[in-house]
Length: 169
Image 1 (cartoon, one colour):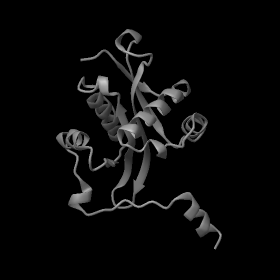
Image 2: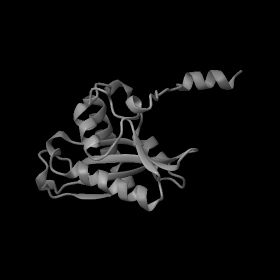
Image 3: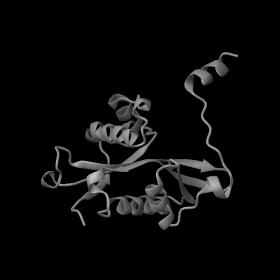
């Protein structure tokens, strides 16, 4: 097992969080979709009313092959389902390739599960790209149910330009 610590993100971690978000987007072949800035991450996650929470996984400098010590993150927030109550929504979860298979991802998921239980959430929800079979299997081994195939839910998005159109009517 790799020597690492898992801790709540701090404002000083914003550049590492954005770097990892971009690495995840590259892995998903969606790099061009990342438009978020460090300033927005800082304001949105560390103000008086944060929109998200974040855990970071960190290794000692000597354990990393490059200059980074923050090697993983999990970004989450709370939401509410009128059928079942409070939910922990896992928005993004990523561990750098060279640190996978060392138990870091399992520990992140364990810590998120503890958080969900302590805050009386009824469940944890998240989305996984269909082609990310390794992650799908990772979650299924831990009891996750694929609601898209079991219940037939579809994910929709209304982009900002369309939101603006609706507000002007």
